[in-house]
Image 1 (cartoon, rainbow, N blue to C red):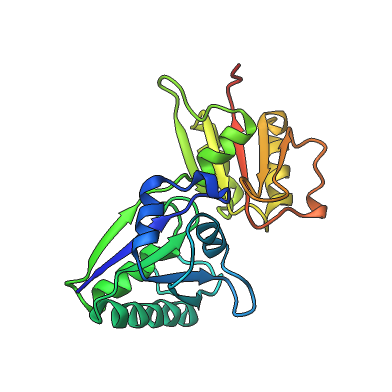
Image 2: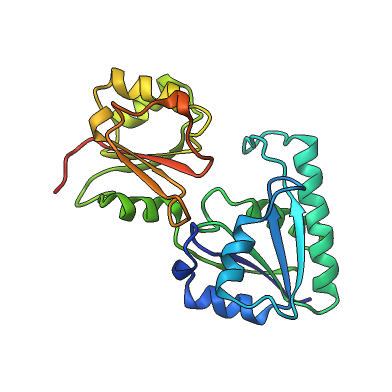
Length: 244
């Protein structure tokens, strides 16, 4: 059986695609591109296609519903079905001898749908060969855009979904020097209120669509209006210690 490649293509700027990722994408005749809805384009595909010519490639676009996944819990039936359908499509191409690339936003090891597909693939065919190609994460790209250090010396650095309840988030922030809050777009109003209570509004940075068109960086959230909303691709960095 051929190889399934889970390829990190970075957060948005095609210039951040690694040489390794470009080489793998160029070599693979089949690309399996994730999308959030049937009528929406694949962001990962758009990034990859801006760096590597699609000519002669078979591109399979597959919809993965944007629903919460709790690790260790029973997944939503629609989500589980999407993973299994994806695994069936990929297994078919691998069995026919084609290498398959799954371009994924940022780095595959961070909140990537691709890992769920890997698990479904191995459940169907335990002999499946999988290669993971790391990529530039939205976390490090956001820090670069904000001109911020994430951690230095013996500092504690935490990455956590902002969907945690406030009590848990407050404890995490209190026990860290830098916290990166992911998945903030639906809970930004609550996050701002929490940071205000903790006196950390001035030490928070919001980065939207990092590396993509209309990138925005907001230093200090005191004047930010959550009611105006923020983009799906948004990250908040909270740095409890001031740095140069």
